[in-house]
Length: 194
Ligand code: B4P
Image 1 (cartoon, rainbow, N blue to C red):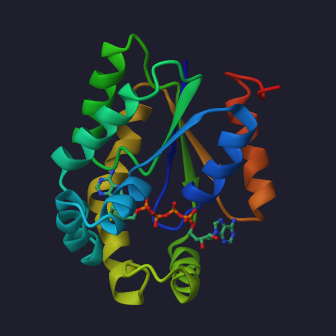
Image 2 (image 1 turned 30 degrees about the horizontal axis):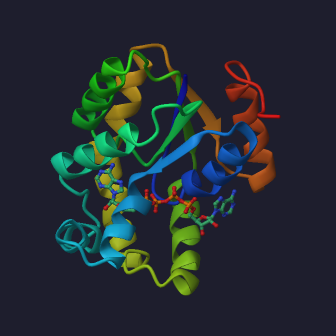
């Protein structure tokens, strides 16, 4: 199995690039942001709870997110591999993911980290906020999300660097240019699906 973590700050293009990668390599997409927004739109208890954290620019508690990922992994026992998009976002989530994958006799192959300067992130998210209707895409919340990323999520890159699995990717340029850089890394492990 090929298991990829697509990593980076809010607005770095994880969701955008995941779409391309899934189509090209036939991987299963697991985006905790999408899963949480789905819970919110269905007004489940989990969604209502998560919305409070997301609208404040904070991370949703680890236990909630880890539980969600565990059940999603079980839904796809025959997947060629997974793209983890926006997960793990804390070291506790990374440890939990390693344990879940070990139970399935597999592990993370590589973490690709999209590197984008802060000013560019803010511009992209403000722009997205104008069309997305996402309540967390406004300037005040964006600033908090970036601060939360620096404090709690950046250490996840060090966690996988210690395992020799971190690759830094320049995340500025056209979507196609960045996809090309990601492909070069992915194809060290797997080829496009026929
Ligand atoms: P996410 O849904 O993961 O979203 P994101 O960080 O905002 O964005 P992403 O990096 O995917 O950017 P995108 O491609 O869309 O998280 C939302 C919230 O959910 C978090 O703040 C947190 O509260 C909660 N959450 C999620 N996972 C969690 C977890 N594991 N633990 C705890 N809490 C969790 O790109 C952004 C914009 O840039 C788009 O408009 C796109 O069109 C544009 N763009 C992309 N590539 C570009 C390029 N090359 N050039 C110019 N613009 C580009």
